[in-house]
Length: 481
Image: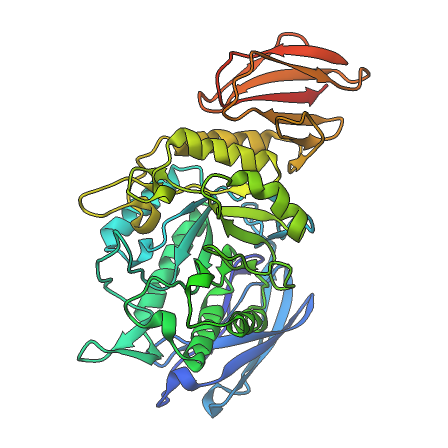
């Protein structure tokens, strides 16, 4: 039985279902479809979803007629043909996020995307009630992206055993790396759909070193099968990003050739071409590699964090996402006991330097529910300030690029139209600006911590002085009239 997509629209996954197929080793079955639409012919992999059901998922990016044919090592799955119609995208659907060809991001339809990220590594490996709490927190939070692991995590403040794993267990509890637990993947997909509903991109971490189940040291055949299965199931979700690893350089069982092979598998099996990167601990990856769409990076130096965005942009000429500049919290680790003020300072510093800096939160809790890993409830002072920054970015006339300014304060903007200078932990009582006297600018004094904007009563032009309150975390915005 072959079921075709009904009511499909652009930027929403369309699914071809092949049911009633009994095979002995369903996860070893090869299946793909060739789908031809307005933009040509595309190879789309299929997967087994349990109960004798196989699926082929595709993300059409324009309206029109699509025809397909299936190819499989199993006769009952091979040679199915059909066609389906795809309608226009809904007004709220903008398609997958991609780079804009420079240092920023936009959706497939051209809409600008600002990745205001957070991290909750193992939130989908927690009890269902806690997962629902996490979603409720995200619903009212400013974040547009969340980093999350497909594999469970074993680390400090991460000691619980998840109810489900990506692989099946036998009657003795031993993991069978040759069989996927479809109930795990179906639950994950429900959570992904819920993230999509609230406008949060899912930055999916495929490997990490914090492991007690053997998933960090699987052999090459298992690694490759897992990546192909993940791509077949998830690449039709419009809001997915791929992160090959969290802290790849701590995974001693993997070689540089492994990471290159993994990237090639995703490029082959993800017809949507989602964003892809790899995250480091102490040793950065070669982000010049052509498959790396953007730099996903964490601070390496104990003190210099977002200040490095300038160097990283120059080094790799790609968008820079500082996914971990340290976390607001009070745990014993230096990366996890920043004040909210310092996290927001680093975030503004990186933003004005032309990058994107993410949120994280690690406040001690007796039940070991820390947002950075398990999600739950946001407790910090920084999320409201991230919301304020997001509004500043959305109000700007376009993505902010570094522009020449004073030697002691970074400045971003669009030449002749818009300037945003940030003073960080400095506390000047005034600043002097010298600009083209032919252009008048509205002057906004922004308190990035107090979340206030004070607009001077009269536009300014040429050389002018702006008085400031002599406290840290201030910014000045100039808007051409």
